[in-house]
Image (cartoon, rainbow over all chains, first blue to last red; front, top):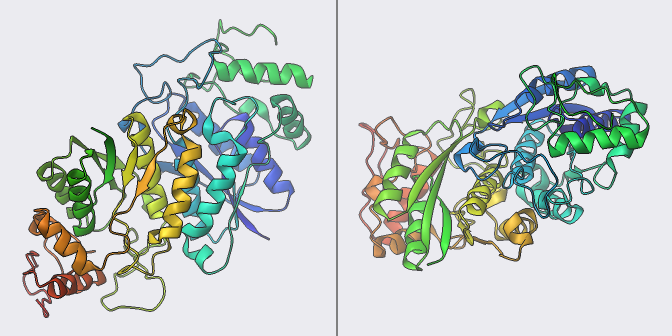
Amino acid sequence: MAEAVVLVSGGLDSATVLAIARVEGWRCRALSVDYGQRHRAELAAAAHVARSLGAEEHRVARIDLGVFGGSALTDDTIEVPTSATPGIPVTYVPARNTIFLSLALAYAEVSQADAVFIGANAVDYSGYPDCRPEYLEAYERMANLATRRAVEGRRIAIRAPIVRMAKSAIVRRGTELGVDFSQTVSCYQADAAGRACGACDACRIRRDGFAAAGVADPTRYQPGAVTAGR
Amino acid sequence: MAEAVVLVSGGLDSATVLAIARVEGWRCRALSVDYGQRHRAELAAAAHVARSLGAEEHRVARIDLGVFGGSALTDDTIEVPTSATPGIPVTYVPARNTIFLSLALAYAEVSQADAVFIGANAVDYSGYPDCRPEYLEAYERMANLATRRAVEGRRIAIRAPIVRMAKSAIVRRGTELGVDFSQTVSCYQADAAGRACGACDACRIRRDGFAAAGVADPTRYQPGAVTAGR
């Protein structure tokens, strides 16, 4: 069975990606990154997702991206927006996917994996440059020059199976594959129990995704959260 | 004055690269990575190098690459070799330069820098895949698709000014530019005071570099260290 590393954030997208990798027959190792994010409840969710979807193991790499600042997700002085804004949102974390993929690449090399799966999506988060297919293709090209395994002729694939899917399609695919979305956390400012605020961009996109998919929204919301549209 | 991020490890190569960037007229921010390496004295050396060569600031990003293992530099159960071995050495850290460049890319984006400088060298460390020019070019291509700044039309350059230089040429160039090599630490197993073992690959290559350059070796060695060839 071929080995893969799957980046698992604890959110809806990466849980679906892990389920896709498993159903394709990959033996999966889950990797989460503790990068000083506001929404730390997602790390507990990631552990649950990895276990319940049959990952062989789950590792957490710790890195403090707050050392650079510049994002509402790692800098407490920047507020998380509660309405859609034009352009690249302040929740964009500089070079985040590049850093995450690089950690996954190290893990893949050590564990002799032939693929790295990432839940990047270019549809809902069109403002994030590092979620676009052309970025991911350039990353794969670079990765195949970067590692000992690649030099020795074992190519590595960077797989983003949901990159062109609308959120509603991701919800449907995950539901088909038995993902328990009630255990996933997408909210940028979830509370310690992993309950969603209902108001941030990530909550809005997620809620609209369930509505468009015609799937009941199993998200656990904070008391008093905005859940209009459920 | 244009802004750059310079990866500074505390070693001879990256000190020379910082001096080159400064003489080219860049305003430099130094970045070091505390990745659980054996040779932690290099981080103290990095702070000294950054200060003495006029970096505007020096940040240290912490990340535990020991979580993946697989290298003599981060895994205490793998011994540092004391003689040259064919192929890629066990001191190779999986995806190290990819991870370091990705952190530098984040810092560059936050600090509005137009270049990242790295002391990669394809001559002496020909066994490291992520020191080759073709790798660095692929990284640059990817980086220019990865960030908000790039999407907004401000390209980022990945600069490796010593990539094709022999160690002796690096020693000569650094000496011309006033680098105090006595404060740099190259040894893979330096002691807490930053004194070199004299026996590992890095010590051997460095010592031979000074000899070939005709420059007196200012390296501080441990008592009883192998220093033949000085």
